[in-house]
Length: 257
Image (cartoon, rainbow, N blue to C red):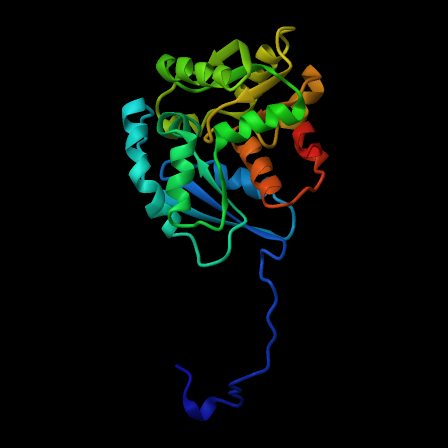
């Protein structure tokens, strides 16, 4: 143990300066499902220098059913309240199926009740904005969900002006299992669906599926843009935050405003 007699130098009140911190360009907040093992890694892969990501975990079920997803609504303001005390340019709710069941407007209202300064989005809102930016009204939809949620997702996208003539699913309700589906399996499924001449783009739904690192590679194979819940959400949050960086290494979406 260091004794006082051994202390040669002990400077206090040393001079220092402060800067804008990690988020010199923007702070963005992410409400992450308790069960999600993927979204934070994908965001950190995508975000450019000067954009700080701060996340808070949101109580959520491992089994993805409409009834259990609806229960998350009351946990949204709790999680938003656990984000650090910085000004957020945008905040994302990290659950595609949850946004559908709860309703995008309800999600935004719940977040705004705690963090009124931030623009709020979610994977459904982001996906619709992404397809508009890509000018891709016909999409192939890949999900891990059970048929009930798949049917609802397709209907909701079509109500928002998108056509979904091609679908595929891994039919896996457990979020922890979904997070371990290999990028190779996801890539093969995206290519199979995306090659259809009935679609303009591919959307992969679910924040647990790993797409960010393979998006540009799949685009090179099928010659069409692709995006996912995490990929589109990161893009939309950056654009809402006023960050218009062109990041072609992440695919065609990141070359659009």
